[in-house]
Length: 77
Picture 1: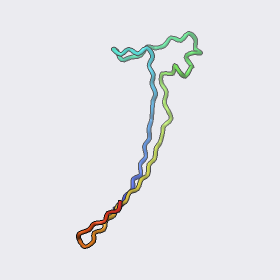
Picture 2 (picture 1 turned 120 degrees about the horizontal axis):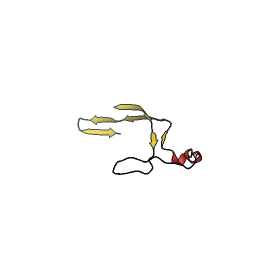
Picture 3 (picture 1 turned 90 degrees about the vertical axis):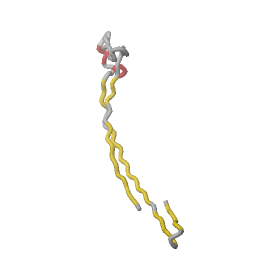
Picture 4 (picture 1 turned 180 degrees about the horizontal axis):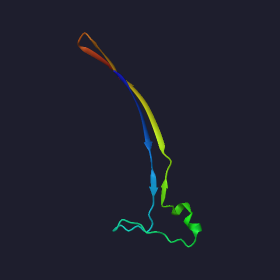
């Protein structure tokens, strides 16, 4: 017996970040920046889509057996 498997996955990820998180209401608070310079800083970014990641896999398997004199079976994996 033998076989193969070919598979592909595509992962789409969105990163979100909340500041001033309230565990009771499960919401975050908006940030008031003193200047627009701070608002453009990556560490204060609240939403970002990551580029898609594609993974591809290929695998094979085989197994064989032989029975001699209807008593002895030899198995090869």
